[in-house]
Amino acid sequence: MPYVLLDGKYPMHKLKVPHTLVLLFFMMILAYLLTWLLPSGTFEQITSSNGRQSVVPGTYTVSDVDIDLPVWHLFTVIPRALGEAQGIIFFLFLIGGSIAVLRSTGTIDAVLGKILNRFSHRPALLLFISCLSFMVGSSTIGMAEEYIPLVLILISLCVALKMDTISAVGSMVVGYGIGYGTAVLNPFTLLVAQEVAEVTPTSGWEYRLILFVPFMLIGFHHLWSYAKKVRLNPENSFVYDVSEAQPPEVDEYPQLDGRKKIILAVTFAALIIMVVGIAQYHWYFEELSAMFFALAIIIGLIDGQKLDDTAKTFTIGASELTGTALLIGFARSIELILSDAQVLHTVVNAFADPLTELGPELSAVGMLTIQSALNFFIPSGSGQAYVTMPIMAPISDLVGVSRQVAVLAFQMGDGFMNMIVPTNAVLMGILGMCGIPYGRWFKFIAPLVLKLFLAGSISLIIAVMINYQ
Image (cartoon, rainbow, N blue to C red; front, top):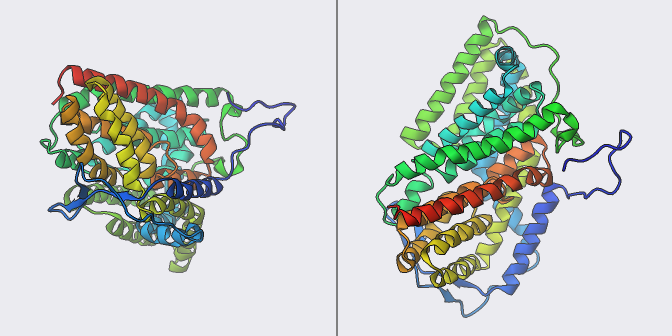
């Protein structure tokens, strides 16, 4: 239940969830304690033609000597993690600066005014279109980090429609989570997993396309049910008392004049170039960051701004994401601690072993459970595929489950859990940008993840029964 107001004040005895940075540090401590409790061990690994390493099933061995990490490793791992996550961190800084320059032109507010005039009486439709767009983008070309530039725009739009920041972020995160979980063509998770499992690339797309519809409806129903409550009473918002999660109100929207239309056209052109670059030329953080920086300069010139003014606005926008950058670094630290102590493969092996004792249907559900749990330790979709699929594929042969089912279990475990695990750098980055405490987000998203897990389990049982190939 949402928090209840008593005489205009919040109750004194409500549970207070620590700041997200504190929560992540506690999780780092927990990971460090696991390195004491679990033995070090590794699988043999082979290098594929594209340079990625994957484990060899059946080769797990416990190391002769456990690796004891010193206590100060908890602190030295943080700058290392920030360094390893530098791509997305600097991507965020440059996006923050670019969006700040774009907002300073008034173009975003003018576009929002137009959209509100058209959809102000149909908020459910607007939220559905938003959520569906993110689902399709993630299901087809594997977009996730690329959505980050749209966060602040979504927030302004949803707040103007009397929703809150969780509704805005929800349309994005629920969209890309379900898009990944039921991906039809996603090259970063689906195709990697099928390659490792030696399954024909893109095969089985018909069943995944069928699943896309009911999972989309489950996600949107959860999102709209929450947003509708917030529209009826703002106090129903899970972030009603969180000042950092309240974006500034816009009293009057500017006109979309000729100059703003040019800026809008240039911005859309940049987004199209981004999509083409990702799909055709495999652009990633370096190219995308450069494109957004160039976009900021062009927009400033079109708007007639002095270069000094553009630089100041850009700097302010980038600096506002410093806290978000720290969250990403701390989230990455958890996986590094486990890897440094060589207990990550120990965790994977311990999860996989019991599957051989179950029947086909339960084994499929077990794979989903294991992939969901492992996503906490290995939040990278492609990284998880290279670590787990070489193990899950042979196990699926032993228990009478097709390798296509094993791939589907991986997809769902990775995609659905991306919406909730605090080790997911993209999720923590988005929440940090919006000022949403992780505890409040968990309260919103946990029931949906449970619904999706149950629906995914049913889907996998059906897949086993129809011999999904």
